Length: 198
Image 1 (cartoon, rainbow, N blue to C red):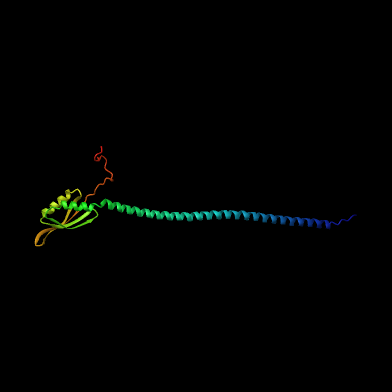
Image 2 (cartoon, rainbow, N blue to C red):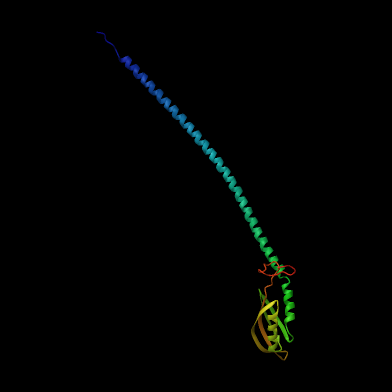
């Protein structure tokens, strides 16, 4: 009977399997390292690209903020200039009003009436003065009512007083300035302009 020793053969098989296991473990470790390295590189590339986009957006935001500040400054300047323009236009429109008002009062105040004070608040004028009689005050009120520049005279108070030993009537009244229509204002429908056909 022939005896065969299988121990060396089994030992060799074990050694071969152990080598295969180490080789497979090494290969898996290398593949895992390669995959990690590739993944890390790709993620870093994405992060870098995103960081560049963020930096670009931040620069654009700073630039837009500067533009917005400039626009706000320009808007404030525009509002300031427009308010000045409105004031100047208002002064231009009303610069002759005082002269016309004094001329009209000089025309409408009858003999025997003397104005003491005149105060304008907006479109309202407060008048105080002296008259030789109450009928002169009535004449003054009628004249003011018929004036093209003044309207709605309102007598507030009248009382008898002595001035330089003369008995006179002291009065206090208000009158409104009639709003004047300029050529720039829109005319109502059907209004005819001089020299033009309707």
